[in-house]
Amino acid sequence: MKISLYGKRCQFFTREGISIYAYCLYCETQRCRLIASLLELNVPGLRAFSPQIVKRQRKQGKNVDVCFDLLPGYVFVFVTEKLLSFNLFHGISGILRQIGNAEDGYALSGGDLDFAMNLYEKDGLVGQVTLFKNGESVVLSDPLFNGCQGKITQVDYRKQRARVDYRFAGMGCFTWVAFDMIVRPASAEQTADSPPPL
Image (cartoon, rainbow, N blue to C red; front, side):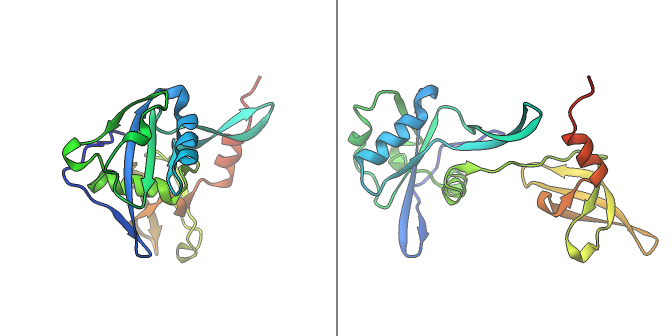
């Protein structure tokens, strides 16, 4: 997934009457979490994090959730007033540069701001995402479909949705649904969670 971090014009996000400006820093990968912590300690009211994603791994015969860097080397910074000076970033070892356009004051805008605010809403932690593929048999979990089974014929990973073809009253139908509205049949889930044969 390619993410553009260069905005055309300066924008901000408003929540409950409070303006929130988002910035992005490119840093030494191994120091991102430390840099975010130092920024929060040094500047009252500032929120900073290096976004993480939860991935499931099998350890000692059990499935465990482990956090990994979603965007290695990037730290997102959120403030309620537009930054007029970047002196607060100086003196913190590991910050390499601000991302964005100097003419815009480096504040994220457009799709970049939307992406940053989605991370902000999740406190920088992206949950485990179940991925599906074409041809996979699934069950529509929404009560409206009453557990109807179908097959995935198209997948839109960007919007995290899939087209599911199914039969209703003897006729072929299809619908686009979000990943969280479809599940694998119980037998397929047990196979996915089972350890590989020895």
